[in-house]
Image 1 (cartoon, rainbow, N blue to C red):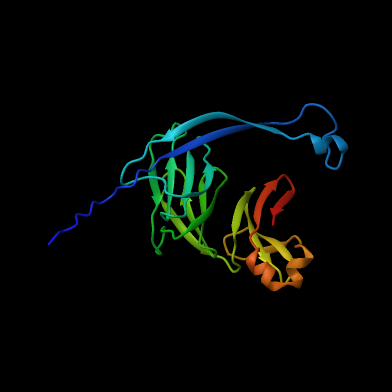
Image 2: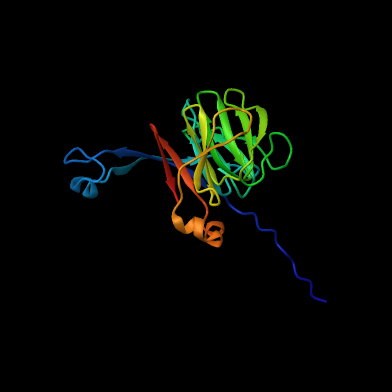
Length: 219
């Protein structure tokens, strides 16, 4: 009898950080809607690239989002390995902030992450949970359950902006301004989303960003 030998294959992981700089156009009228602004695009150039120092037990699987800490460190949301990581800008010192699970301070399919002020790391855990971590100690602080499912979020001053498509009410985003979990809704959505619920369900993801007093939404 011939026996087959099976060899266990160990995957090789390799992660890297890329840093870019954006330069605004210096000539022409760049006001929104002007003729010059249509042809004037901010140039983005690569300024640095570093390899993340990983190991067999701690590595970056599938990064979904990143956030830059006040000290220059980078926080990574790993949606495939269900964890939150922090690494120095040099690519050294990779540590796990949160791991897989459903308990306090644990994550499952984490998506958006953002920094509030200088002291809080907020993680969108699934679509209705926010995990709060202390930036200085990396310790878990609390969990907040929100009332409406969110696809993404971003920091807007001391508040969180959620991409939460509510086609029935015509709102495009929500704002969490306190710790109660109550969301204040705003914005409008394209008519096709309100007229066709299947379209809203299939293509309802919204990415949001904060720019001064404006909220930018990508459908």
